Image (tube, helix red, strand yellow):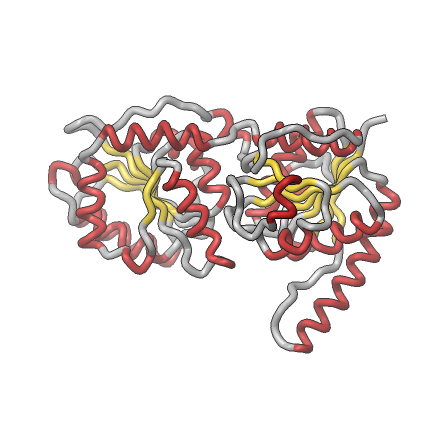
Length: 371
C-alpha cells in the first residue's frame, strides 16, 4: 500500500510552488499526496490532478481585538477540521510550507503525534514557521541559517534549498557566456509575478542613459504591470532600445537561461531560479516585504558572490545607469557571479525534501547538511 503525505501551505505562489514541486516528486515515487490550505489554493489541483485539495479554515492573526478574536476562533475551527481530516487520511508525514493557512493543519498534526516537518523558503523565518519550528520534528530551509531560527531548533534543521519548477530544472546548469564587446547584451527585468512599478519607472530611463555603444546592443525582456507597459515601451522606442514587454512572461526560464544579467526582486522563488540556472543578478528587494525578508534573501545571494543588491530608495536612473555601465563592461565579474550563483543553487531541492519526508514517515532520522 502506497504511503500518503499531507502538505499544508498558505494560498500564495511563494508557498504553493515549492509544495507543488514536492508533491510532484512524491507522486513520482508512488505516494499519495493531499494539500490542506484555504480557498486561495483552488488552482493548485488544476496543476496536478493527482493531488486532492482540502480547505481548512484559517485567518491571519493581528490587528485589533475583534480581528484577533475572529482569527483565534477560525484557528480553533481549522484545527478541528484538520484533526478529522488527518485521522481519516492517516499520513506518513505532514509538511508545512508557511503562511497562516498552514498553522491549523500543522498544530493538529503535532497534537496527533504525527511526523512533521516545515519548509522555510526565505532567509528569514516566516511568522507561521516561527510559531511551528519549536513543535515540529524537522526544519528544512531554502537558505543557510535563516534568521529567526532559535539556537535550540538548529540541530533539527537541514538546508535542502528551494524546489524550483520542472521548466527551470530542464535548463539548470546551462552554460553562461558573458557578453562580448560589440555583441548583444541580454537583460531580463522582472518585478515578481505581478511586476513592480519601480522597475518601469527607473530602469528604462537608466538604460536610455547608457552610452550608445552599449544601448544599441541591448536586448531587453521586461515584465511590467499592465498600466506601466505603454510608458516603458515609449522610452525604449524613443531611445531605439530593442525591447519586448509583457505583463507576464510564460517562458521566464528560457529568458533567464539566455540572459547575461537579470534585474529583479528578491523573492525566494526568484533567487532559487537564478541559482538553479546560474545567472548573475542585480536584486532590488521589495522594501515592504514581511520582516524585510527580501532584503535578507538578496543579502545572502550577494554575500555568496552571485549578484549585487541595490536598495529601492537608491534606484535612481542617473546613478543606476553608471552602475550598469561599469557592470556590463566587466565580463569577468559577470562570469564569476554566474558561477557562484550556480554554486549557491540546489537543483536537487525537491528530491532532497521528498527524501526527508519519506524518511520521517518511515521513522528514521533524515540525513543532510545542517542549515
